[in-house]
Length: 359
Picture 1 (cartoon, rainbow, N blue to C red):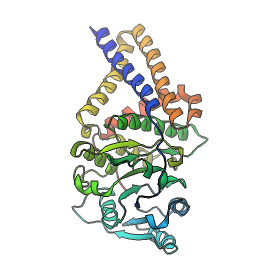
Picture 2 (picture 1 turned 60 degrees about the vertical axis):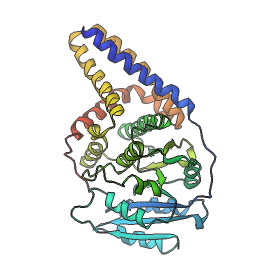
Picture 3 (picture 1 turned 90 degrees about the vertical axis):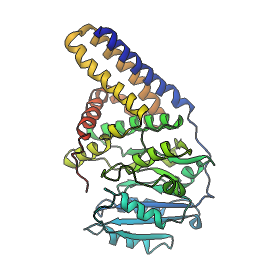
Picture 4 (picture 1 turned 90 degrees about the horizontal axis):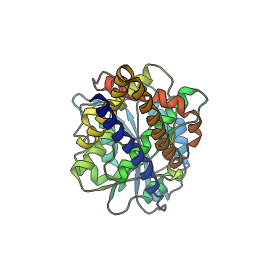
């Protein structure tokens, strides 16, 4: 009975991995455009030490200046974040700085600051990134190109900058894994998640779905809850931008408390997933639990399942790595193959208790 159950779990898991790999071949790059109005919104809280590279990259954007604006929101910082924002904004008439003062009872995390920025935005499209990121010169043109008439949200790829340490490369590996799943699920109009480091949506949709009504009490997940609301409360379609000219880079985190809380925030939303995603996530979790049971009770079957798991995950990751131009990570795949599931499953379980900190 145990063997049959484990084989069923393994069969479903392998089918899912192969499904991901084959779907990546269907994703296409869309031609760029520069005729849609865009509001880029960046919210930052106590980021004076990391914000300048992003601001510099925003000055190099190639897009008609009368078609976009930059809105910088200081989210109640106690350092010189606002001063740095104003230093840059005074150089460009289409740059604006807002200051958000946190109030009791408002949405948690940066949702209230984002809402303030969106309320001041004049563009048809809202485009967001984070304070520790850098954007490419063709970012706006590339993201705008995916907004066909029926598309309401465009998801983008963000990758941790190349690093020498194994820990930094593990973070890159995670970026590719998450983006591959997001790209495939978005193709079928059921995105598992989105990434606020590189995300675009129509301003009108934000109001249509009630903004951050869902998840207002959760300090993270502004991107996750918004994409979920669009998926469940509207008829707008999704797209994932796979063009290299849109890829955002972000700084790697150092191991420590900040990284741990970041991972708890990102991976602790299992109980907020839509039913289909919750079912698939539960299947993946049970398969890995089943491997642990097999190790203790059926070692021979465990060996066979581990080999099968390695092969199908290699196929799936190779497809994602090719899609996002990160095939160099394949050389360390055996190491990441062991470490990454432990990281994701561990933080997903612990994060579900909502015992993490925001800034």
